[in-house]
Length: 571
Image 1 (spheres, rainbow, N blue to C red):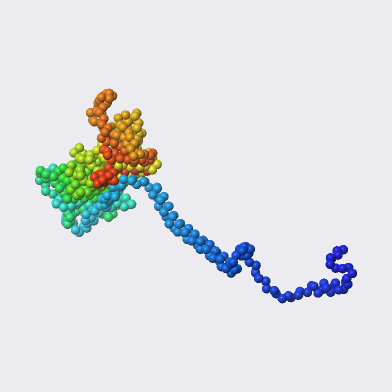
Image 2 (cartoon, helix red, strand yellow):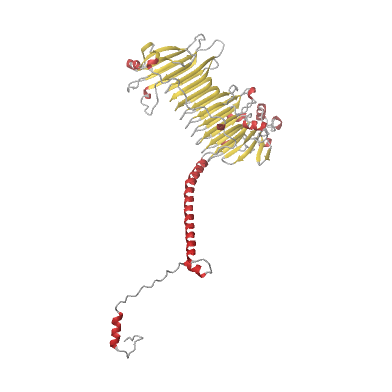
């Protein structure tokens, strides 16, 4: 039994029962308003001795909350602006790092722009209705094997533009061109009394219907005249059409014949040009066409443009204004002579570009003595290919003064090699991304023997005493000036080289090491920068004369991404 405390056992049970019943009924009481308790900050403030009232403390707390809220808003805005500005900046920096580093000497693009890459094809395409004469066949449908042969000949004045053109175009569908081919031969007429150019056309065709659907026309325009071929828009599976065109240019009796322009745009033709100079020279020459190979024995003009695709360009070119050779998936092999006589006080341009095939060019430069005081580059050159070797040689003509040449040779999957003779003076930047950069000093007589295997036969700094192709360190002096490595290059004479092959005695070797020096600004495995020439080295901060010498100094950019790059300094 459980006894509750506070209840006397002597109390009356009936009264206890009444009390219990009355307590089970709820009793409504009047609500007494109770002030709300202050928060933690207010209570802490009340504990500290202060003269502020509670409303003032509440206002101070509100101001603090607003300050924190505005600070948060400012941080969010700052973060958004940082993302909007920072991400593009980081992307641009990453792209710049992925590209080859620009050289610190100033690019030749800063001086003047290269010639325009687009070429003008005169008045082409022309209409058949504007032809002066068409299909003046001297012989038609003569059996010649399995085909028929038709021939004609035109005479074209050369006092203006002389052109050979056609309405044939190259597209992704090569079905038409599988039934078409052409050969062009251009030479000088042996008959010096002929005043006009002679164009002889031999056309081989399968049927008379095909001959009648083809028009070979003599055109005359405001700029000049020439030959235009209008071929049928469709060829059957059994059709075959072949052209053999011979162009003979007139010459003078005792002097060189100057023709204003020669334009030959013949797609799917093999174009062959015999030696045209010095009997005939041109002011402007435009040659090529899609899938049209161009082979030239010798040609001279002020401006020359050869543009082809999937076909080789080769020959000997002489220009004094600009030369542009462009193809793709086919090699370029050129022997080039560049002149700058100073008549226009502007540089002579050279532009060579191909892809997926080799590029080889031997360039000879000539600057007359009167151009020695010309401030600025004499020659601006550009050579580019990919996935194939690139080799360019820059030499001076024997009668030339030292030329200021600026060159850029670019490659990615192939080796890049540029050679300069002992008369070159200027800066250089040999740059690769993931390969070896080399600067080689060679004896000029050994270059031909070493061509093609320089990567494994020479040391980049010319410090290997056991390497016959590198600079001979026993005959050069090396200094460190202004935190730069400087070495004087040896100069070998032809008689010395011959004598050194017969005897190894020191008396048979003559070396001059006090005239030309090589100074390095940067040496690393993938990039080498520096200067070569006769000291003192020009500086832009050493007076007006030094600044003019600095601005007219040559520069070489030799770039390759995934293969080696070499600069060869001939001594």
